Amino acid sequence: MKSRLSYDDVAWAKSDEVEESWIEFILYEGIYEEIERFLAGNYHTRQRADFKLFRMGGFNATFLMTFTDTHTSGAILRFPIPGVAMFPEEKVRNEVSIMQFITEKTRDTMPIPIPAISRWGERAESPSKLGPFIIMDYIDHAGSMSAALETPGSQQERPELSPDISVTKLKYLYRELATIIFSQSTISANRIGSLKQTGRSEWEVAYRPLSLSMNEIVRIGTLPRSELPNTTYDKASLYFEALAELHISHLKYQRNDAIDSADDCQRKFVSRFLFRKIIRDPELRDKWLSPRHNNGPFPVWCDDFRPENVLIDKDERVVGVVDWEFTYTAPVEFSHAPPWWLLLEKPEYWDKGLDDWCTEYERRLPIFLEAMRDCEEDVFRTRNERLGESQRLSSRMRDSWESGDFWIMYAARNNFAFDAIYWKKIDQRFFGPTENAGDDNICDVWKERLDLLEPEEKEIMEKYVDLKLKETETRPLSWDPDQYTLEYIARMNQASDSDA
Image (cartoon, rainbow, N blue to C red; front, side, top):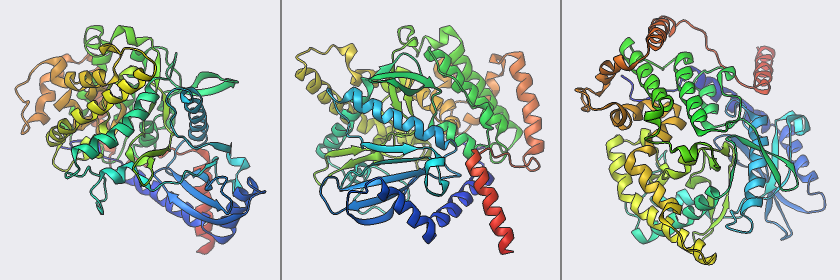
């Protein structure tokens, strides 16, 4: 049985095909030169020195233009990549707003070095209608924080914390990261969602919280975009319930690679129904969601914040933080959980398994919490205030890990990791021990939980188990990208027909 919900390989291949074709398209000489002219036109009074495709990231293509003067070292033009960014216009709009919001709200307290935006626009305004775009200052840097934390010269495909890094260096680098997290946690709004500027220094939570997981379950989980949440939330419990429903919908709709047997399918439905029960049942919910936090305020949260997106200079000091897509105001419990990225690698991808990840994580967590406490002390010392234990983010993070709340937050946010987490880290805390709790037979625990399901949940499970087993190899791929990606696919097909 699958330890985690795999990606739909057919959808993933389709996403890769569109991405690779689009990259070839933009590198055609005519398009490339048009992009260069477009970016230069925003800096027409300056003498440019160089222009190049700077980076192909997880979601964006980034072009860099440098100049001969010293006003700024350069300018960045960034486009979401079709086939990868499934909500390009929404993603860009949200990212611009949150970058401006964070810059404004932290400027006089703990400023986060975010690139200054000179212009952004929709697809219709872009060269060759490539897509929505952001033009921003380039931040000169020596590397990323992730590279500083990895083994020097590492050629590993996925990042991993260097096992030989000294405690002194690790605490220093964690301290740099802790400052960003602490600053971000101090700004909040009265609803959960994405922000819109409504006036000078006036902001409103006007849009749904577009998350990284929402993008991915549409891209490689074949969930129709119509099944996604489309509202803001004034209570954390309502948002958590929406996330639980999203886990159930994802399992229903993903065609390929979601299950490998009837037992596997039932096990996955049972875990998702029980997770929803943990959120819906007031007695169970009170074990991890404090009523005083349910109504907010809701701090800023970035799904994709990690050391890779933190830029450092040659002295390993933070000079920039980039890639703020999928950032929104969220339940405070998200911020109270310690960062998953202390080891750089996610728990569900750890080569030696979840238990070993936890062992290694617990070795590093005290160092990070000590760095966070130093950050807190420095902040409140400058304000001439005494910091109570209940005010410390470091204390809340320690409590989240020790109680297991960390895993609820992680499972809620990460659809594809849910099955690697639920049975080992969440189930027994709320529903008690089982006979099949050992590593060898943990896949059978779900059979002991069937009596906890509601009759209608059992009916849904039976219906979808039969349906999914029958249709795994027969149902056509239901891939639901944005309109621009669909138009680009049609353009690709027309070109292929012409070549033939």
